[in-house]
Length: 208
Image 1 (spheres, rainbow, N blue to C red):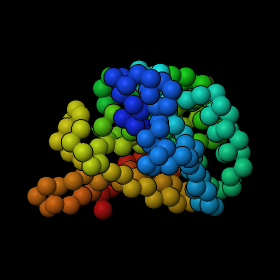
Image 2 (image 1 turned 135 degrees about the horizontal axis):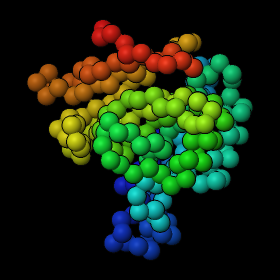
Image 3 (image 1 turned 45 degrees about the vertical axis):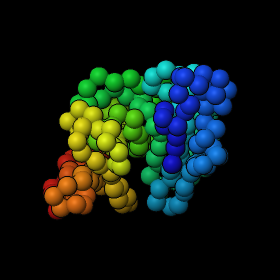
């Protein structure tokens, strides 16, 4: 897990927001702001983008980007490399106008150099999956934007819906299932499914 902008103290507590913005997160959730998991199939790194001095979009520090490079340089070659952050690094027109993290260009360059294949993010409260090309080398990254899972803060087309994503990693592909809450059935059901051939252009999966 990684913190988001609502884990930072609000503006009406300016001293706490600027001096110890994530004190509550560290106390009640975890002190680890760079959580990770690695095995032969997947390597996942979480980084914090929520800072008290940032108004919108969050940011990634130069120290975090250097750590990203070091971390992924040590993982198994076969592992799918995934980055988890709260804010977005890319403008996604399909979800409407939105902000991106400060230093997003440098972050995307670091992502490409590290061979990251998938970025899991949130912040926008809209579920969306889209492959993007990181210029100038043509490196492709799958952006998996999480919708609102457990609150009523959905936005845009997903204002009244709750979502979560399921990722299934295989040797040559990753399958992504968007699951949406159905009030009539009182459970989450399949909404959309995608499959992406690793290091190739993706194609949309047929429904199960």
